[in-house]
Amino acid sequence: MPPVAAAATAGPGLHARTCAGAALVSAGLHLVMAGQHTDLWWQAALMVVMALLCLPCVLPLWRSGSAAAGRMMMGSALGMVAFHAVLLLYPGAAGGGHRHDAALPAVGPASAASPFGMLALVGWELAAALLAATWLRRSLGVQHGGGAPAAEE
Image (cartoon, rainbow, N blue to C red; front, side, top):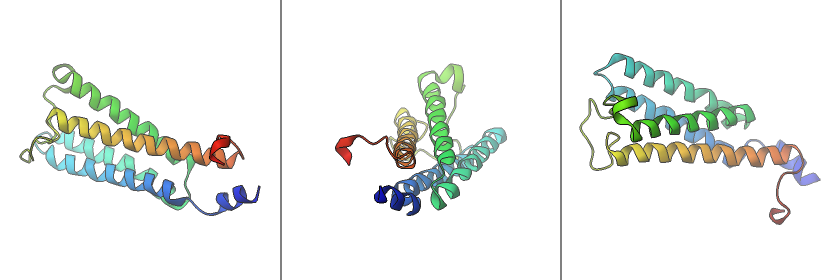
């Protein structure tokens, strides 16, 4: 039982801090997209709000590895996956010409306005959700003294 107690007091660890870094990168990406939505003020404002919504996860995950922040990060990332998947699959219905490169020129085949760029955004959010989910699984297993398969011990 001593390894569990030592792990619980050791701080958030690399996994939680990687989640915090992913949330910070997501906030930065939303701010970049806000700069690219200057043609429609409400889209730029929406991107700034989304960037601000990423920030409450960063500090709690970095400092203490908060499970609530991990759940919020996972939920937000999966919400973004669903939102961008709708824009990717139904651009006429939901997106209405939604573009991520309104002010800046396309930067090759993987610009955010292209299907590949949208897939890259979906991939990033899936990776962030996976990071949060695996961190939550590991941290809750340590807190409850179990949950980890016997093969990993």
